[in-house]
Length: 462
Image 1: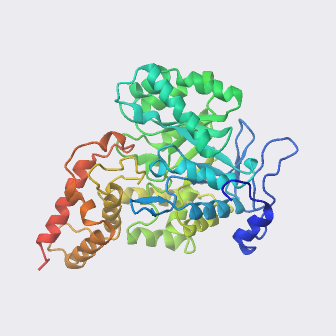
Image 2: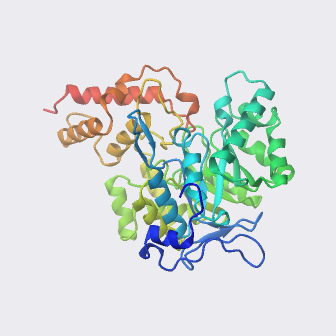
Image 3: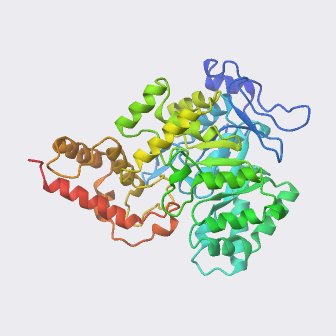
């Protein structure tokens, strides 16, 4: 099945008739010749790309968090390819047609796994997005020619891994990190890579050219200043109801980014609508406020509805590791019910209340991994933020619920993070820091959490 297309009868057999009730035929074309969605008619919400006429599902599949399984050789984890295939099949059957990956995702395994899963379906039934992730070449003393050659090799490898001869949406990856504008110039301008990519678009190897942005807003503004020359087909930004007006670290408020793109009629692709999962489950009193308004919706649905409510948004990416995540998001976007003015106000108030809690602004992107000392950096931050949201972080041993909170934090920490991968093993080498798009001072945050853990261990709360 990995080597040849899957026909419709096999597809129905694999998924079961119940999962496919009402599904339209895959890979159809409209009379105008533009590609149409493999839609479950009347359900999934679609947006049209003005550059190409693509009908893109408002829910996009982020391929950064494919399911993993233990390696048969016992030397770590590998992609669960059968699991990926099943998720892709289900997504396509329910109208999702945009799949976003990149060379470093899943520690370099995502592109190949995504290519295997999608190759089993008609090529015109989905859109592939991937990226030039040459930020990994910064700091290596490359000459402009070396940067060009290594980057073009990465570009060619993406075609091989994805088993395709054209890429629908290609991005200059993670613009704005490192030294900001100087890093952008080194990666794409001085090396001549922008000219190369423009020629690839002219030849049809790239159908839409854009960039993804984190960090120094000067880099964002510079690329937009060249829009009349380059004609960006889309731009990907971090956008959610916290970052809309309250972006942290070196990131810029999404309100500004979106307006700049909308004013130029550039379609927007949204990443991190859940802010690394932090908007999927809030502190209990915040959850209750949202549940009172829409009892049937998940907490995550509020964040997705926020992102999808803006008319220039082409698709909203979600890294869906489990089927239940995919199903919940499908309910949100099939069809989308945009937020009302009252709901926008409620979410802004929720964001303001969230800012009172000192959470770590980690989005679990995994760019900091692997740690040379084996520390599970995203896992540690995720546990800390989870306990913070659940009220399991206390300021003093005199707090009324200190003993309960202490026990919950320590037991959960030891269960979710193996001992050798906990924060106390960080030696502050700093290797992770330049890779973080959120500009988190990772060693300092790990030291802070480890200090908190040691305080809990030394006190019984009595």
